Length: 438
Ligand code: GAP
Image (cartoon, rainbow, N blue to C red; front, side, top):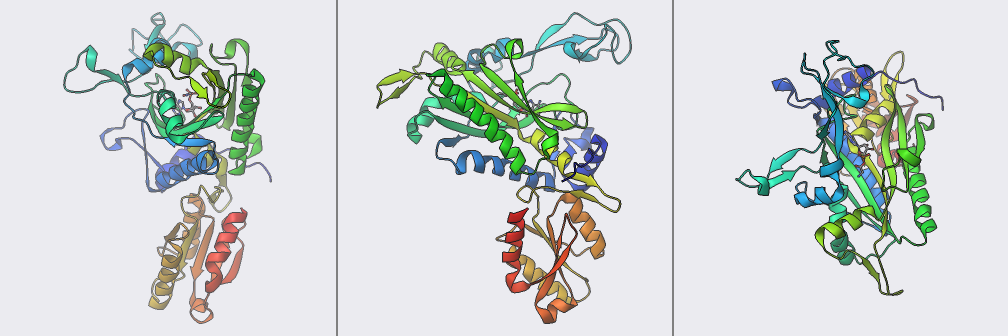
């Protein structure tokens, strides 16, 4: 397959707004920087991305269980995890125009906005959102919105493995919101202040060390394959391993999966070998024993952790950019069928023939419980195809005059635009097979 040209971010954001994928949060009131709303189609695409991940990571495996932990956690968690002391960006303020910048993004000592050399020295800025629990606002009520979902998994590690009766190697997966007060949110939904993560903490025996490394390599490969299976173009996804000084101090190995965004290569997902760092921190801070006791070998140990972690919003952006194609007469989203908001659109050829409209309605209602469908009878058929192509619907079914006597319909393929005539008795089977083939 030939590589599709990259769309611009402007093209994609315009499509997102026009078709109801993503809107700016609180647009009515001028908007909130770094927060986004998902519209009727965006919410479907997002659900499908979560579903594809959960199915691959939890449903199809018997060595991973799920968890859903609270966003508000004991503040001691963030002390133990290092977020209170280390989760900082260095920022500088411009004394003239009052704008704030990330120190690592500045190339001169002048403010990029007003041009004055009136920048302060860099200061550490903690990225966690602070809030208060209960009516009193004092030190005892201090709390934070979680900056990652991972810590909920570490804190519940023992409860989860005991109740699920799992032993290492096994994993705990979680999908949920995370919050970071990013100094410079940007590139649409790539970097925001409120976003959603999908994280797996895979616990393995720390000895022998080669075994943990094997699991790390396994997860780097498995996660890359997931993106490929969902139709991502291989030229746009690369593995970037980190070494030496680029690694976090506790990490034994890290690989980022990076996507070639219109603004350059950017992290989509990180796979990190975190050693025993996180559990060791929570044992020390809580005074509780989190070691795993292996009944068979009578060994007691803190497992090492391999963590694949990605953002749902960033995945949605990458899938949409990757699927986007501007052809001479249309815009198409070549989304994988399992991600497409609607799998099938059903149309009556004309609106003013009750028999045709009734049959189209009945066909659509018959498919609806089995395949995600939509019904469209507005505008002419060409316009309806255009609309469905632009939102990535893999198949359109048109009920016409001949359908009334022939009990069949035209099925049109989004990518090839090819049309075939299919008996209504065989329609569901035909669509299921065709959807499975893409
Ligand atoms: N527990 C490890 C962890 O949180 P991270 O690299 O900070 O690691 C993991 O975040 C993933 O979460 C990233 O690869 C990215 O997909 C997503 N992510 C992080 N910060 C984000 C932000 N501000 N906006 C959107 N997605 C973000």
